[in-house]
Image (cartoon, rainbow, N blue to C red):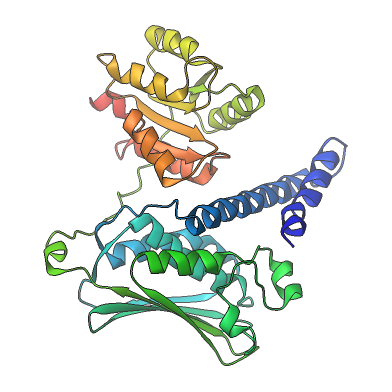
Length: 366
């Protein structure tokens, strides 16, 4: 099953690339098809890495006081495009009073996002999805309910087991390894909570309930909402330096950034990057971490040691997406960490924020 699901996206991806080399009509459709399959393959790899790290106890929660509403908002944004494309009626209803948790906001958003993604995946077009949250004693109950295909009674007790799927034909038609719910259960239990699955049977929809302990009063007093920064205006004109030893990756990313209206330079190693920055300061540096000679971490440290470069936004591009990998990049001096291949929507939003709400590059306001 594992090999089957990993190879599945490769077939249409390979065919699309071959067709693009020929003079065929509707090339844009082929590009979109290839993009979908690459994203799907990246999600499968991310899930495999996550479940391996979690089940081997290699994930450490970065707990902090957080409002549940902020976590839900982040999770909803993760799947909004999917629900809209499938014309789902999506309703979110939270308790009016703030619900404070002592949790890892990124991992908790992953839990809720996975459950919402499952609900959308297994709910037919035009169906409904509800997310509600309310206090229940010393805990909060987050419920995600849908009008989807439901869960067979004999499968319900095993729904959180690793590599277990219900109706294989149904699951494979939607893509997946059967590990998303295993990740959910493990992350919830790491937070001291529990998760339940309910369904009236096939065709009756499903409901998943996540129970989490509320923050202690001491932590609750410190909890603050993580309000998202207002999206910046979509201004162009940044000067961007790409540092990437994979020439194809560097050139393709540079082409995309130039299409967005930015001035882009590329280089393939850290020492050359330092020389370029000395001659012409960029607004943003997108750097691979596994560079030959001077790696991306050393490059970031050297750049942060130089006076006058405080305004330069450093973005790490890495094949590793673990929390400890992200933290290592931040500790070295990077401002952001993106996993390869970078999500272009996330990158575009990041660059809009650099431009700022005035439409001026951030460096102009230092």
